[in-house]
Image (cartoon, rainbow, N blue to C red; front, top):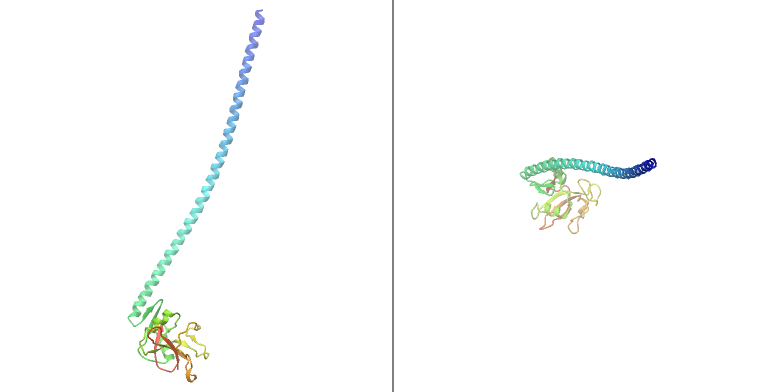
Length: 223
């Protein structure tokens, strides 16, 4: 009886140990699954962080490139600014110098009206000797300005001629005459020998007339 009781006690202890082991196993299995889940989650977070990091690096490189380009452009603009400033100062000095010798400025050109009178060809040579040429009129505003250089009753040679082809008026630089300010009935090539153009001073706009290139007139240079 005592022996059987011992066997029963042993079996009970064995069952208890087995249950405890099973419980421990189940607990370890859960912990393993949890660790695996935590590991997978950590890997996903790491990959996300890596992606974000890579994107930030690309954005940084792009911003650096843009910054470098802007810095380069700024330097180019600065160089252009210095160049333009120097050119402006040179032009201003040139204008100041010309003003002292009877030249007048309008927009980007300077103009000179002579005191003496010469024929059209000699007048043009006089302009060339001054680094200029007979005046070319490109706008209504310029026409008004050039007209204002002379006084009432003055006829002044400008860079207008149809010497090459009769009736085909061109400027001394070879460009065609698009906008004209001819007097009524002009040009008429009177006696067939009027191939040079002159500015006839009027009270406001001024007018053009054709005259014989041999006539002595004052002249207007432009440069």
